[in-house]
Image 1 (cartoon, rainbow, N blue to C red):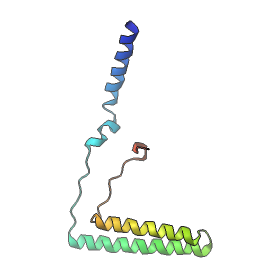
Image 2 (image 1 turned 120 degrees about the vertical axis):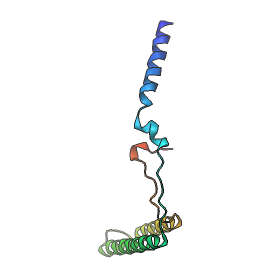
Image 3 (image 1 turned 90 degrees about the vertical axis):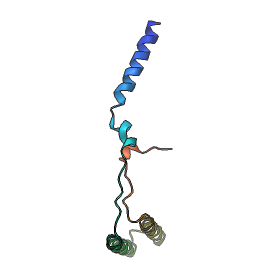
Image 4 (image 1 turned 180 degrees about the vertical axis):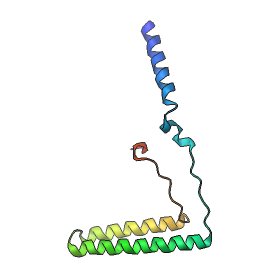
Length: 106
């Protein structure tokens, strides 16, 4: 009975210590989103389009120099375009980012 009580108290104390851990409070913190004006959205869109064009140019150079195959380059460019469309759909809001140690693996 005494061992059981010691084990229960130890488990409870470990639980209480972890309540102040930043990971336990992470769900409580919500990132506020900023509402951009149309001028701000168009300026961000212009910059994002330039970044997309630069990334495509860079990938083309890698293909030209033989560092990437054409299929790999097409897949990367497709991913970049999907990301741009997603940013556009979400009004160029930066998606919330969790530290890598906090990701839940399935």
